[in-house]
Image (cartoon, rainbow over all chains, first blue to last red; front, side, top):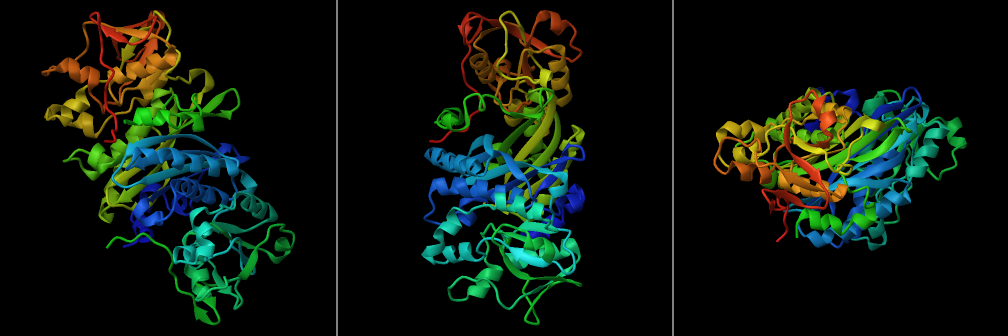
Length: 285
Length: 285
């Protein structure tokens, strides 16, 4: 069983629509401003690669939640950081990295919790604000839209696999906070981040939007062996995946890659074949 | 080193005033409504006693954060729940308990995260709203105020120590959400919850308010051996500790115990002797 299957078992408790995206949204100013909220748990064994510094762990933890805020077009405002520490001296560099990441993207660390833990565990919660009309979700992709992504999908996974050139992509990911707001303003129809990989994210977006995708043969892959596999299935990047009409795409002033088109039906096809629906997942044996 | 000492090492990063209370507060509607936010990490070894059910773990986790919201006079609105699971089948009863607790107190579970973890770990984040003039903090206690508490301090610790009569106090604590709002409206000058015990909470409130406390000889203790120790030093209860003028206390329609008075100076004295400054704390060896 993986975490997606497990989520299905409790969706009735919280609501299907409420669990469809990475952020929860609530009216902040009725009809005008939404507040979004998201929380993410990271811990040493599965999320912090060996060789990563504490500062980088703090940065990455905040980046994960800011990326969720960015993916709905919102500006992050506040971050809470709960740290379960195996050794107390790790707290300060973790919090320095956390504060640096929040400030870089215009948010503020406003609180948290400190706990002792057998395994270093960091849980970040981020709040953000977005004008109602700019709020984006995984649903909303329209037939004929272009499919686009930002950043360099596959780079974080390549860094993890020993391509040292991409180590920084892995340990200090850059959530696309400002890009997300520009993309929403340009008229994107659906948006999410690709933290679990492009392929599985497309399947998620397709299911939420009730559409399918055709990917182009030419993809903006890295110049490494098995580059297409890294692009499609690598996790840990914090680029944004979005759909947008060709007309609106033309007026978007953010560097993006156009990787395919929205089509009727479901699934993800490339070169006449189905792209595998797999990516990063937590798995219980 | 314990978690209070450890917090001191990072208070400059987040701000001294910002880390003085359990909740962070932000203007929701400038000058009128504050939004408060708090996060708490619990995990099996140190927080969930043996014999507790998963439903109770979910309830307790949410109760801890709602108690922080209650302690500043706010109404909880939303809860996020991140669960690090050793076994996936534990998720559903945990979330049923979490949702039940949130709904009991007028809040809604709006999101969360699911992770695999060697040790069951639950991190709850709660948001709440409070009219600016009813927002209460640990600071604000005034010389001459009465010191009061709600609930039954010591009961949770007694439950943990084998007094089965108090087991429910331990595993399904009742955050004083509605009481907190009534106490704030009655004009309490300072308020906090006593999750780490009455004595250490008084020391925290005294430091934040720049005052001392004298406790009465007669305290509303349980009818068990060592009752005074349980009352002063037992953790895990979610009563509220607050200070209020005698005049305002008279018009408060919540059952409370009056346990002492606010005095000049600092520290906590009872029967001419200093009460020990100790309670529940996470400790690193």
